[in-house]
Length: 535
Image (tube, rainbow, N blue to C red):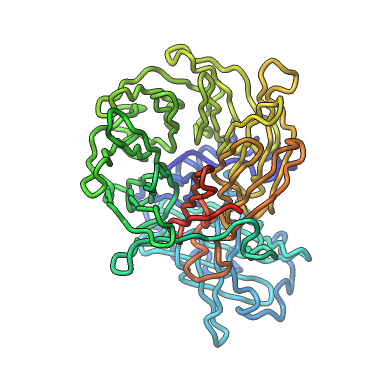
């Protein structure tokens, strides 16, 4: 999934990063690298190659700059001492994004690992450096040299990325990610977990065969969107004994298609799942009979002839589908007949740049709350889809890697629970009560830790429910929106495990609620579908 650049990482250096990312050098680097967005750790396939890079490049710590390095930073440490998963913020010639690496103790002083989604071809642990490098036969290289270590566990160093058109270097700052020091669960219990039957397990290979990314539940049936695997339909009537009802594979798997989101609607006695595709927009699947589900329509607008229709997420409200088209912005479609959808209008942010794109959204009535990467949250009047208008925004608050939001009413206040996605991304509580002086202002914040990002959010009344990647599922009490506090959690992530560490974006990704039954449904990158009961 090729998307524009990720945003700044630490608000304390926002101005410098924003200037750097919009500099001509950054633009040139982005164009040359074909860098990726959401969930791809900046590791998109390289395109337009016409020459090979020396595969010996960055083969040892001596190939990297030594500025900022410390003599003896890792003295006395063996591979076992540095074994673990590391989350990293990379500043690559002004292009800032998050990625992951993993170091494995292979015994006998040898080490292996992963870097930016690739199995490492060389890992060295020395007194002064930890080097992790991957290279492929056609000239792709990812290389990380950690050469400094702070008392708080922060590691620093240099990062290089090579393609057939050249090598690009930058800095890396990171931390080893371990499970939080807390019980596995508080206020929640696991009712069931499903990732296929024993004879037909769902494929799980981050970035290759299958990653569970979102879920929607209607009645006793769950619909799970899985990146390279398509749609899985599951009977969840008994969470302790879930069974698979159907599977809808991708249409264009060989072309790199992924389905990143799923929403479900019923029209005229039939049920439809709408899948957000990075190539063909939204795929409408008739799932009335899960065992014989059929693709019946597509919707979305091409930015130009021959270009893909990349719809990252979508929202359903009032018989309409609201699409987050990463190239064009918001699209609004009438779903009176899901087999023949009709485009009604849309919205393009007036401040849009090549670095910004619509990522996710929440819609209620005549208001859409749009999460724009690099621009923050835009509040748009969508009463007339053909004449939409910007009425407010939440921006310039520090980190504007706006990712997800949900709007709820708490007392006299209408608030948006807003989350960014990136290193140090966290939750902002935003007052969206129109007609008040507080409209569009942040009034509260909440976070776990800088090295783990929040992801999808839902809210009902004075409770917010979040899929929080490696920090699992988190529930917040919003009764005082200025001081949100955690009241329940469930850790879905096992901690250091050699099946993980391929991405910054692993763990609890998607979430859905059944408040009547007190159930939370979670799409977890590796574990599949989890059903939790909120006590």
